[in-house]
Length: 67
Figure 1 (spheres, rainbow, N blue to C red):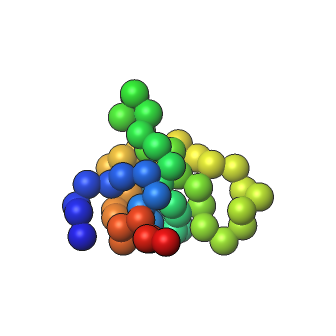
Figure 2 (cartoon, rainbow, N blue to C red; figure 1 turned 60 degrees about the horizontal axis):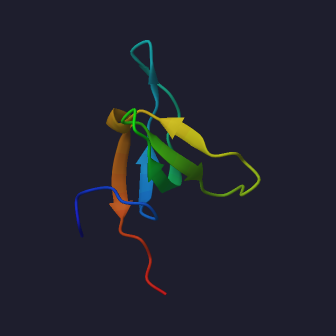
């Protein structure tokens, strides 16, 4: 498994706000932004909008699935 997060990879996001860890969720990486943030699509409810998250709050779970 490549350790670098690429579009299509599965990740787990654990947001931290004011030093408090919030509920983590699984997501699919969509793209890296020029600001250094990662755009993700949360898994489960596909109607949920994509989110921009801090790259420090993201860990890679698996490579992009092959078809």
